[in-house]
Length: 487
Length: 65
Image (cartoon, rainbow over all chains, first blue to last red; front, side, top):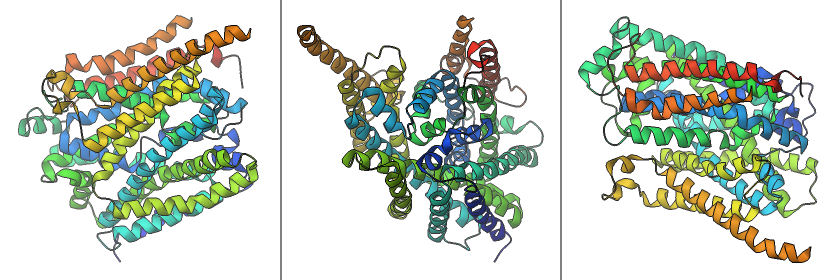
């Protein structure tokens, strides 16, 4: 037993307690369980939409990226901000359509807009393929946090199992209400911890305001984008791609449905960019660690925040940081679990058995929760370093839904259901081919250096869009004479 | 007043095209490298721009559901 463990245990118990309490007074039908009865006000929607910012990936990965690479980490600040600008215009029509048609999932949206159950199945499969690695990443982060912050008293394997049981239990009982309640605790804690660390550590090690000057002296060029590799071209193309993909994550998309009104969503577009700035303090921690705990390389850069914390603070405070980290894994994890289970029950099972009613689908979704959790634990314990690669692949996968989704919001949709399906499949195939072969523009030395640095995801999106337009036009041309003849 | 919505293009220009012109460490602004200070400034301005768009948007006033 050490000073850190009680805090970490308290975080798990707090999540469990809040998660169970969230159920009170609700009849947990599918609409309550998945989309909170579409009754969430500004604060809950804000916290669910902001949930994407503070996952273990940003807590560990954001500071680790700043520690290991420096300026390229700034991209995380930029893409969220631009995604929020897009959200003002893009999300209200999605919300309204979902409410009018009583939709539960992202896949439902495509089913209705394109009047195609097949397209719904394709979207659901893409979603699940992207969600599982994301869940694996949360569990893996959880394991790392508990092992380091607990000074090795609890192995990461045990921590992952405990975390999975806790999150699956409260998700089964309370659904998205549990996510919303636990996210309140998570965001209060992380705000306090991250702002404190981001201010205290630079002052403690460098004195007021001179940290970046010291870093620039020790590592010239570390605080600006490098001329090659993660260059300006990489930066801009990655910011654009990830901004477009941001709301395509099915669990983030699903949190739009929980809103009580469209005004709630538009109001959030003002505040979320400011909230995003908290990440600046996460970067400060990473930068502070660069000169203080040097030597971490490869996947170990993600440990920077905790290594520096262990070096600086008493065990009880490291425990408090660890407790916060545990919540950053559990809250997004719970939303991913709800979304994945809903997709399987509502969009895959119901496609096979259309006679299933909401009650059966709801029961199936809840039963699927522990199953999905166990699958993710299995991949977490088996998987190696490829998980970050899988996450980036997940991001590229969900971004492929963007063209057909945005086009479907127009008054007259130029995409047909065949075009949408063909575009998504072509884009996903490109992502898979690129990810599996490890290809990128650097393998094509005849390209100009600027083009070599572009994010390869641009290609998949371009392929997707071209196929979508070509197939849609072809279908319309083929249908036009038949249509004229019929009239 | 719908044209005021086009202000939303500005953050995209500032954060996607802008870095090409401000990829410098010096001068430090409030202790931040110039590029990072530029990004932070534009995040603050983006919030302001969204507030202006929100205030001018009739959809937020008619008390729609």
